[in-house]
Image (spheres, rainbow, N blue to C red):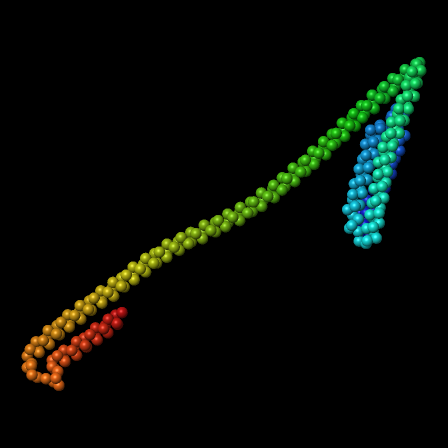
Length: 293
């Protein structure tokens, strides 16, 4: 059998049992009178409290059935549970009406019994005196018992409230503990992240210093190379100028020794030799410069 169907059957059995107990208490209220109280039976307030507890239990079971009915497997079972629920509600309403009528009947019985007792007491005699004393003693005992019962009921209610408050406090503590544990784990995660970030920043700073040193050293060597090339270039140019000037001076002396009418195809042979020598020197200097570069 399905678990839902088993729960429905259990609710049915509990409802039937609670219904019969409540009906018995209502009948006891209906037949209640002063003689019942003097015989040591349950007092009228206690019977009413028990009947109200029974009606509350019936309402709770009806609520359970209302929740379980839609969870049944077949539509026929759902319809049967809903029709049964309507029948239970009608019977509970009838019980409430019966409880009101029983209380009215009990009050009428008590008034009637009180009237009869008053008539017997007014009759006089030793028997009436003894009866009056017994009634006063029993009334005092009943009142004391009701007071104790009410005190115990209030104490039980306070204990229930205290237990509920304690359970709520414990649940709040558990939630707070969970939140604190979550915050602690997040803090540990942030702490490890900050540590890794700090290490990464330190590495980047060291790398930045090394890059600066490398750039400075590279720039220094580049400057030395530039100075070397410039100095070599300036030195070669000076040498070239000096050589050219020396050659021109020597060629000028030779030209002064040759007659002015000697012409080789309209060209001075000394001048042609000088120009060829200058060109050779310039080519040689350019080659050396390019080799050094």
